Image 1 (cartoon, helix red, strand yellow):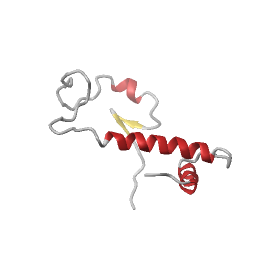
Image 2 (cartoon, helix red, strand yellow):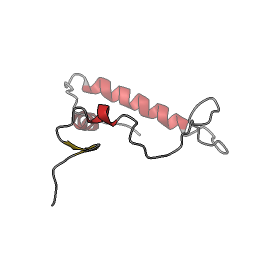
Image 3 (tube, rainbow, N blue to C red):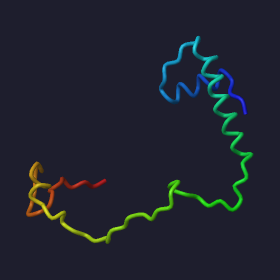
Image 4 (cartoon, rainbow, N blue to C red):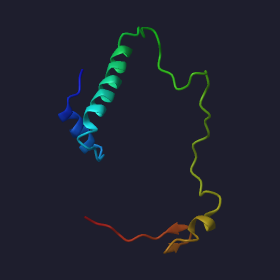
Length: 95
């Protein structure tokens, strides 16, 4: 796959990056080099290789999923513009 100069300008526009006309050929070469590297990865045989989250085997730390009040509602509600008991008061929204 190859990127032309029109595509470079479009990518820059979508990414909201200001690119001068002098920079377009250089960026075209950079993007093509990146895409060539990614294409090389397709040649690697990954049959039987499972997905991993880390290079070292580890298990995720898990905690009990339970509903709490945070243990300190006064701190949480200290800056609330309006509150009732241990709850935020928000305006009613109906569409």
